[in-house]
Length: 192
Image (cartoon, rainbow, N blue to C red; front, side, top):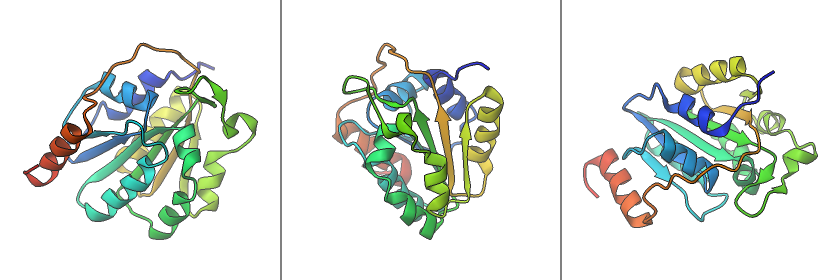
């Protein structure tokens, strides 16, 4: 069995990107990996706001039903806001997909183990919160199936993707929060 690599996974998740897809990335590795896959105005990067990616994506999905919303975040960010899964399971936004890059560590703060290293199963947490379309990807075949769910599955979709622990070079997106916010907003409504 081959080990899934973060940056390759993120590139795969956005390679067949449709114009209406909005992508939010969690702080740290998922943001660097999304920037490496290609910076666009429809990317919103979280830098320094741990735990806020999925709640923000839920609000966006509810407000922009005509758009598909994809979250790409890490297990640490997801663990920081597990309660939001219950709200997603209740609201059931059909246009929301969550891809968690689960390497079992807090990569941005020194590699301490997360709860997923100790037995917490994010797929089961999502299912327990009412997100029926939840799965775990471990192989490239699993990832291909997850990709189809992310693109066109009935949401909410939750995919926990087990990836290798890697220390990769940073690919920096624009890090000025005001600039990122204005360009993202402009891509949605035509004005900053």
